[in-house]
Length: 399
Picture 1 (cartoon, one colour):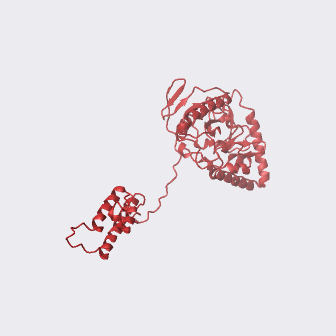
Picture 2: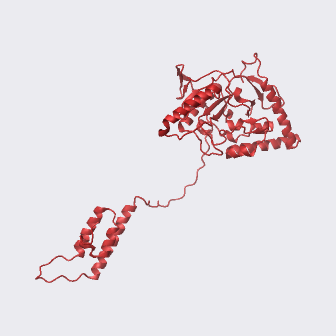
Picture 3: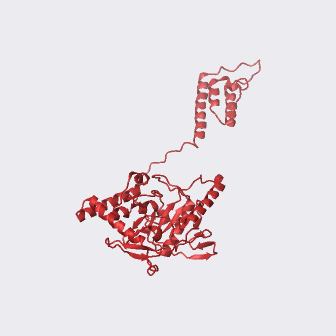
């Protein structure tokens, strides 16, 4: 900026004040030159009369021009930050958007297999290099409308899917951590392979790995209970496939703790498995929904995916809202720890199960504690039948 001795326009303090407010140096220089022409008298020969003194009227006009120019410059600079309010329009009536119903899986077929990899028509790619065998799956399924049936029917085909998280070490999912992410993923693969922990693992890059063959049971669900409108299942290692995400969950979290690539891959894997084994959408659930502890008869022994599972993104209904079968059918209870981990949707399933149990107790003419004892005895009887396994002559029958 020019000093007062360098530019005659600074003979007027008002000019200096406005000039300081002009941030753009080019505009400021043009402004000073313009004002110099009108605020300073032109030199005249000594023998000619001097011009009239600068009048206050002229000063007032110039100051008005200065204010207008200053306001214009300010608005130009502020225009990029201040948005003009939109013109008011007639209010738009809200339109209710229905929830997308669960879609039936499209036909999916295997495009090719190399022994190490499999590709499918929906874009799914499975890495089979880490696949191991375990004991063939064999289980008993109990009819939902026959509560006194303690024997059930044998089954050997996967009847559902339990979704897990590995609850393993996590680092930020960003490019700078790429080597660390790969090393952790490799160690995790070795661990779950050694433990026969899941049938499938989806790593943080969205890569799908087969761990235990689909024909074999993986050690993923332990003591667990699930049911749909037709069937009741216990100890889901045998009857359900285990699909785990490399992830870690937090109590009551709202957003899924997985990457977009993991969700896409899980959707394709779920579509393929549901189509291959005719798995109903109601049998696609999370570990927190099915895990139980028979020693104290409480649900939620494991709490991975107690909330925020992306059911709809996998083409599934929100199964969190289904009443807990362990509570409604077998009289299991819940505690404060489970509620600490559960999100609002899962807790609604707990409330529904409690309401069903109370209504069933009322119809039976028993108090809730007495009716709960009946249900828990029924569970122990079915658990004993399940532990006896399926005879060799029955193993080929599907459920």
